[in-house]
Image (cartoon, rainbow, N blue to C red; front, side, top):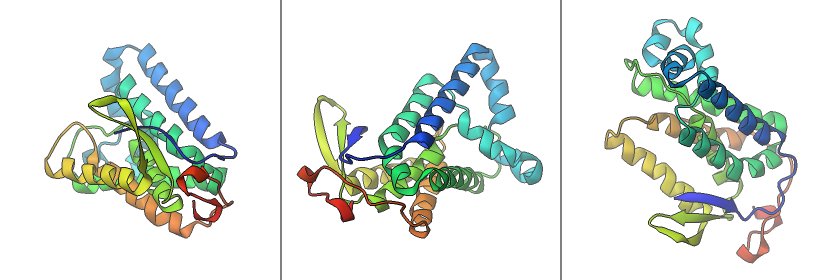
Length: 225
């Protein structure tokens, strides 16, 4: 299911969201400028490799952060920044710049550690912002349970559906568990799960900065969105 927008009508400042999107884009285009042959070197240099991390946690801890800004393809970076663009502004507006960045980076750390604990002997580099973005999704679910998401559901590409956030994000996190137990490789599913639940937990600790407004057409009013 591909999200297009939500029903939140007031976002406030989105400095962190836009900054992260731009930074991820710039890093990817720098990777691309080095040529496809350089991707493997970049992955093993800046990616999070569980086997290497657990052999030398202090020396490899920095790769948890660097891995958040490295992507494997244009589709990979585009999907991550698009989800951040759809769900990030509302969360950032509610938390403010500092707490939003704290949430984003903490979710990224939790995602890497979760993937590492689940697959400690893996020598495959984990790259991408999806773990950190998953934390934003978890926070969004708690902050805006009555909002809705305009969604395209394959194969109905010419039809748009307004789905309640609990259904959309509930289905999304369920899929991550399904993919884990189906042992579908190529994606760090455990990282998505770790980031998402860290977002759920951390947002309960953080106090929202401001009340939000959402489209009244969907009965999502001021103090409840």
